Length: 73
Image 1 (cartoon, rainbow, N blue to C red):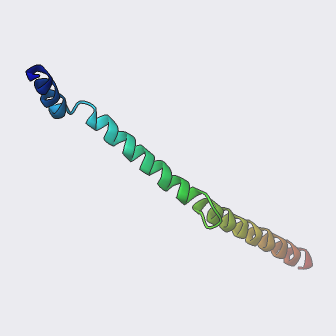
Image 2: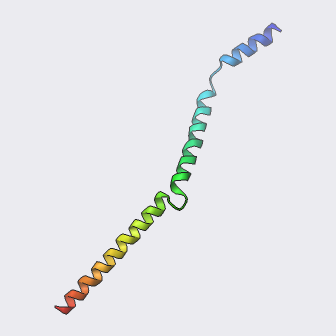
Image 3: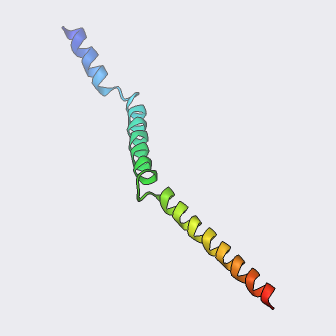
């Protein structure tokens, strides 16, 4: 009985796996946060795509207007 009590006391004080568990929990939290940020309708990636489409359309329009005014001169 005394040996079992000593084993459990030693087991309770052992902290070797605690750091690995903490890193695992942090990794899960980061994965969940990144999934929330980069997926869905209002995500960063969809906002960036919309912004680049707007810039591309503006450049195309400016190029066409500039080309039309140059040919008329």
